[in-house]
Length: 348
Image (tube, rainbow, N blue to C red; front, side):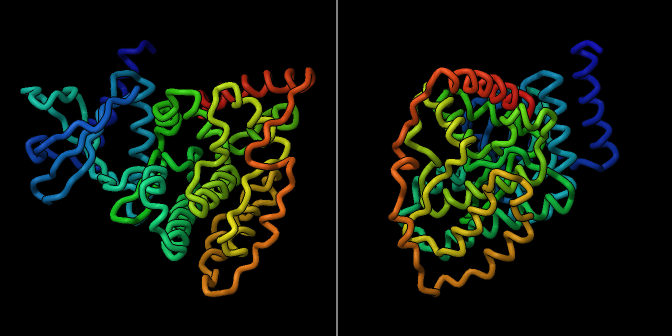
C-alpha cells in the first residue's frame, strides 16, 4: 500500500467515525482567538477559545504522513475508552478548517484537547516547587498513580511516562501522550540533553538484550517509570540532572543497569520512599502493581515523625556527581546499549 492510500485509509477512518458519532465533530467557527504555542516536529499546537463553552482548549494539527495519522487514530481510540477519568487529558473531538487560512493553521483536521494551564509537570515543579508542601506533593503522586492504575485496569500500557508527558491543569495532574507516545517522545527529544532527561524513566529491562531478547513494554514498565516520577515530585529535580552532557548518556545507561538509582531527599516520609523504591526495582517481578502503590500512598500519614537519617549516609560510589570509569570491556557493552536505546526510542 503506497503512502497516499495509507493516508486515505486513516482519513476515511476519521470521516466514518464522525459520521457514526464515534468522534464528535465541531465547526471551526466555534473557536476564536487562536494563539500559536509551538511548532513541533510532527504537529503544530495552538490555544483557542471555545465560544460555546467559554473555555480554553488546545488544537493540534498533525503533519501529513500515514504514520502520524495512524498514531492519532490510536490515541483517539484509547482516549475514547478512558476519557472520563479526571486525571487523564480530555479529548473533545475534531474540527477542520477548510477556507480562509487567516489563523495560519494547517488546513487539515485539528484535534481538540483539554488545555493545561500549568504546562508539563516538569515545568510546574521548576516554577513552583519551593511553594509546594507535602500535602500537594502527595496529592500529585496519588493522582498520577490513580490515573495509571485506571488505564492498567483497561489493559492499556502508557509506555512513555515522564514529567514532560504529564500535564498540570488547575493544580491537577493530567496524563497525556496516549497513542502518540513515540512521536511525542521524539518531539521533546530534539537534543541529547532531552534524551538524557527521558532515559532515567525507561525500564532498564529494555536494554538487557542478552537476557531479554523479546522483552516488550508492559505494566511493570509503567510502574518503574512511576517510581522515578514519585522521586521527582519529592525532590523537585530532574533525575540524574548532573548528567547533562551528550557523552554522559552511555555512562548513565550503564550505571542504571548496574542498579544505580536516585537518592531520597531528607524531608521525604519513609513510607513514601519505600514505595517508590519498590517501584523501581530492577526485577519486574519485585515491583508492585499500581493498585498496591495507590493503597500505600493513600495510607501515608504525613503527621508521622519521619526518620530518614540514613539518607545522609550515602556511599561515595553512588554519589550524584560520581562518573564511573569506563574500561575497554564496558565500551563494548555501552556501544551495544546505545544501539538498543536508539532502537527503543524508535519502536516505542
